[in-house]
Image 1 (cartoon, one colour):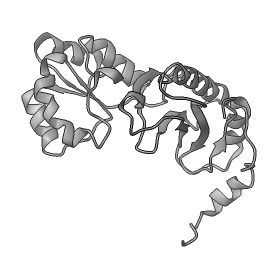
Image 2: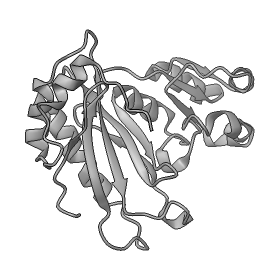
Image 3: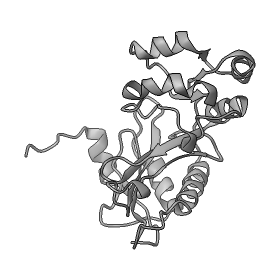
Amino acid sequence: MAKIKRSKRYQAAAKLVDPNKSYSIQDAVKVLATLPKPKFDETVGLSVKLGIDPKQSDQLLRGSFSLPKGLGRSKKVVVFAQGDKAQEAKDAGADEVGSDELIKKVEGGWLDFDVAICHPALMGKVGKLGRVLGPQGKMPSPKSGTVTDAIGLAVKEFKAGKVEFRNDDGGNLHVPMGKRSFAPEALAENITAFLEHLRGLKPSSSKGAFLMKVVVSSTMSPGIRLIVGEA
């Protein structure tokens, strides 16, 4: 296997992270703050290896969570709704709102948005977009809070920093936690709150450690392993 060529910035950052050590959340975000920075504001993300069997439907994990310190950017939100609910979405700040015409636009391959929210009355029509939105992780779902009658509230929450998450085929989660420009304390608060929420979602059929490995990193940094007290 060919060796991955890393940038000088990455190599310099890697010297500041002990790959054999697990850090507390507070120490990890402090280390992250000392790493060499690129010219853009990196996204800080959390990667979690879950103690689940992703082949078992009762162990799949999907949901949403409002980060206490937000994401540091406003998400682009589209809404499938009609009538009063469409107006409610517009008043709440949705970037695009529609029904049949919006469905047709997305069906044609338009995916320039972060979150899709749908009123339950339109799910019969929006359901056919699963083949387009499913692979992108953008398909509206009651579990993630994106199929709801409370359209205005959902739009405001997602634009303010509510994140969606779902495990991949390997039983892993990859979730943004904010921006590199955040104060370390703000990142620590987001990470701590999310992991506490995640612990409460452990499927009853999942045995043993649930949070098997948790790593925090920025867009172009090496991963920093966290102490989670389970594995």
